[in-house]
Length: 152
Length: 122
Image (tube, rainbow over all chains, first blue to last red; front, side):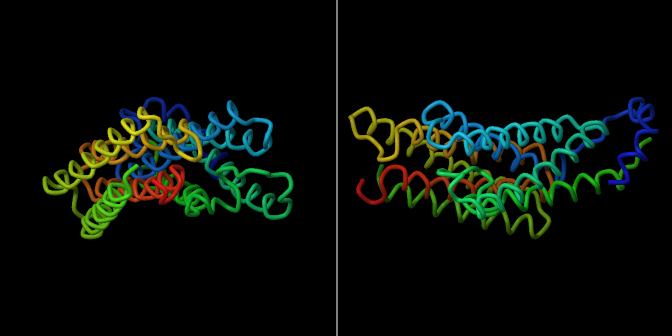
């Protein structure tokens, strides 16, 4: 992504800006809510599975835990706001999208590796495909949040 | 679990989702009437929580694990109140959209609760 190199120069400006740019209001509020829900869902799911039945599908449960961490970090970044958080969230949304597409494809190609499902299995089909829609929406929102309110 | 109660929660949640979704579509924030609707759905969710806890304490147990069931139960009870508070501090159409999303999630959780309890045999 080209903007990551372009924005490094305005780090100082962003730090002295009077108010942190808000990522969690307007449409961002809906995103925060959905990411919050997915953090809770993925975290409680993986915690339960890792504690109660780890041996059954260690790979799937470990990947669920990773997705929970990613969701948690994006939620936190959206709530915190500011340019640094925006870029961190942007990177994580890209990671999330890669994760959904990668694991989605992986689960379809090699069923035997996944005796049990992860949040990202079959492109998030068990979660109404929200896992695949959410990062795309997130990326769009985070890019727009920058162009609408450019750094001071 | 009482099937009628599960269905009631799911149906009222979907109605709330449609109502708040319509408000978001018309570019309106949540209003007093919406909050009354949210309160109604939340009360139903709490009643379900209490009923289920009473049933669990009587020794009935869900097919797919008590821990899983209780986790979904708590999530279902918290869903609409949490998104309701979000919409209090977001007085735009997006507050309404947030409540609609929370209500849809609640309806999905009800389906899962039904499955975890043992679908129909309650």
